[in-house]
Length: 226
Picture (tube, rainbow, N blue to C red):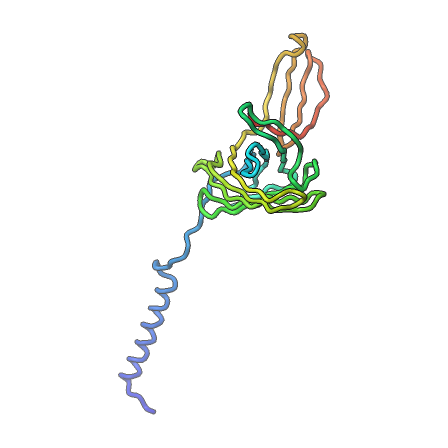
């Protein structure tokens, strides 16, 4: 069918307007995509206390060294220490090492987590000890400066001979234990000067006793809350 020049011109103009409209709709400022999350910085050492609802006097002390990349946080089994304890008006008494499935040993537990908002994260605590394996799920809220867990809850299913449990989580970021220290021991008979360096949860200590160099000592440590 033969078209006149005006019809061809109108058809081309219509196609051009349609293409421009599609381009603006897809790449213009009206996009409704979800803005990226910028979470608080929790990179480094954290001291966490999980308090049981089923056993109000029972607590789990968790020392961890978080690695953070964007909205993801993690701590490998070399960066997690768990100690079970009881708590009363006089403070916390240590009872045993490890989590429920660890059978009294360390080095089997790890942590993964993802931020869903700048201050809220879903955390998984994973145990894979000699008695079996289990994953505890937690939801925590951090302070805007990232230095404390202001609120949190956890739940853990029955596993490794223990009943299901749930409870509350609080935590605090702690500074590396590094630097030089001096003091007197044995009633003032020994003048001690030591240099302490920390890498993760490992300490290296070297110094002098009354001016005589002592052996370098390496140890794995955990700060106990009062």
